[in-house]
Image (tube, rainbow, N blue to C red; front, top):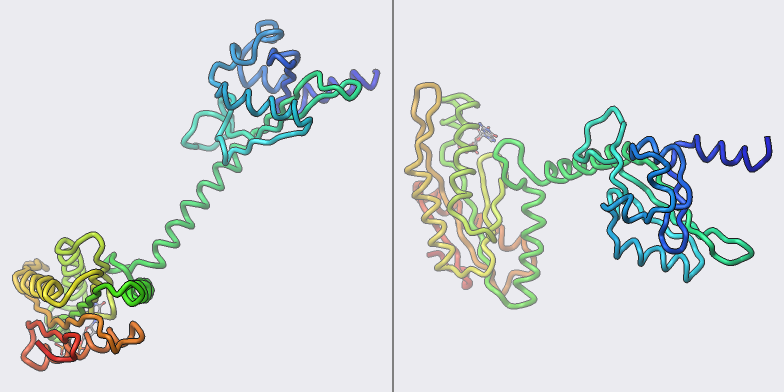
Length: 316
Ligand SMILES: Nc1nc2c(ncn2[C@@H]2O[C@H](COP(=O)(O)OP(=O)(O)OP(=O)(O)O)[C@@H](O)[C@H]2O)c(=O)[nH]1
């Protein structure tokens, strides 16, 4: 067998599509991989325009790609990440993906005769497996990033992420001299509630409080679980009057909330502390401390109350 026949044999058997076009984009040759996967017969394809045989090709993009290969006399590449596929070839992998078509990596090679380009060779690789596992990996990584920010019980931001948000909002408010308010609230006598209804009853209250408060806030407010039965809300661009308004809404809504648990009704209340950014605050932790002071003032005043600390460190 001549070397040429060997090569033709190999090209016909490899597990990659080989498609050779002339400079007018007519098909000169293809291999068995393309014939099998496209389910078209060779005699209906040879000498035909590639755009007639594969009408799904993005014609303008494809022509631009090929003319740059011809003009620059250099090979080019298109990965499945740029375009999932160019040719609508059904994939045959024993996996379920969101596309019925094979994901492809395509290479465009100039074919030279006497240092003159005469043809273009396309290599079409089936990368459905890579696409499938990479997509799965990305989904898992996204879920992981989300679970890193979310509190498992209440499904709101956890303390770590909430504090990162506060650090950003604090430096933004400082730089642009904008308002910023903080609300922190803590469930009253929660130890007693746990002792009365059990930990599961307590957990149900925490879940309900989180979902209820979420409905009372604007999209730009940042709500998180600060500790066991303590929650915190960042209110960007908000002054003391606005923050007190939200705080009172939170207090009242929780006081009116009813939690049904094992044929019993649980009532709860919260003590709320409010503070706004103070000219003397240099770190976001200062704002937390001030809010905490207001919260303990609310506890000491008998619970189920809102206390605030204003820019002048005065309680209101
Ligand atoms: N069910 C449940 N309880 C929690 C969770 N995290 C913290 N706690 C409980 O919350 C209770 C908080 O008790 P304390 O700090 O004494 O405060 P308190 O009883 O709410 O009293 P005041 O804050 O003074 O009104 C403790 O018993 C904790 O075990 C949780 O995720 N689930």
